[in-house]
Length: 372
Image 1 (cartoon, helix red, strand yellow):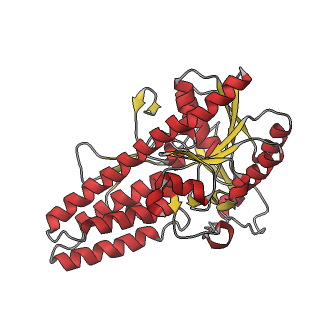
Image 2 (cartoon, one colour):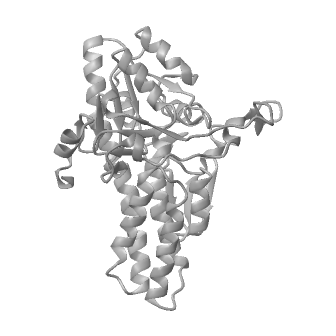
Image 3 (cartoon, helix red, strand yellow):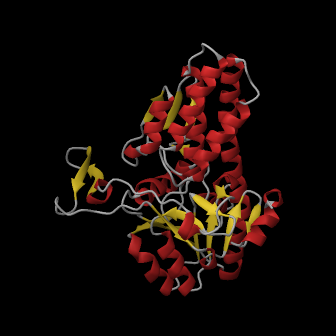
């Protein structure tokens, strides 16, 4: 489990003394401040998802699951029909917050499906609470299994190389992006716990710098050796044999193996392919989109506010305050695409809770035969 100064935290949980309140780590303040936020209704949860108090595929799913529980508490109790209608509307509202990550939709639909045969409102509220917990627990369990499967890849490299394994990761597919352990970081933490010598190159990941602010923070808290690099450094490192393996997470992966992840992942995949560096995507099965086939043509790509590109956030050391600073001419416009798609042909494989497979439909369906 992930520790912050010796204490185990998940990224989202029910408040101990008030179980009708959900608590989250507000990630906007990391790495400089550790802030816990109380969420009291599904509107506040929607804001937390949209404005990235919580972010990352698995955590967005868990947050939506808990958001539906909060909606069930708040929904009118005049009749089961009114109550359900409110929940369906709350689900649509939560789903609209971030269009790219498929976990969000998965969690909302799972909650609604679970309620369809329950007419008693109190039973419905309890069922929502239970399902929210199941979604969160399952996320943590799946990430832990991803670690157990993925660490074998790191072990193989270590056996051949006999010295420190250098792993490059992009964005934050760590504990902070899930409920616990993380996806791309799960094999890294597992290797660290097994005393395999590893070192992680952390892409800063513009424009929101989740690598520099979040991945570096959690690796340092856990005692994993790492180096932060600017986003454009990876190709150079690969040309000089300084990267043994690339592992990233994903926000949506198709049955064909195409993977959508934080903007810039595709460029890492091109550099990895050109330098014969293996690249894997780590994901729990809740990140699969079983309906689409062509990632570049079909996956919706979120466009975010241009100010995320134009401004940068950091700690002003003299005042001790976290500030936003303008980087560019104020009048210059900026584009802010949040994700890109890496075609399956550039990937060595996918690491899931059921094992490692090639990034192609035949191999994916061998692991998930129920989706044939």
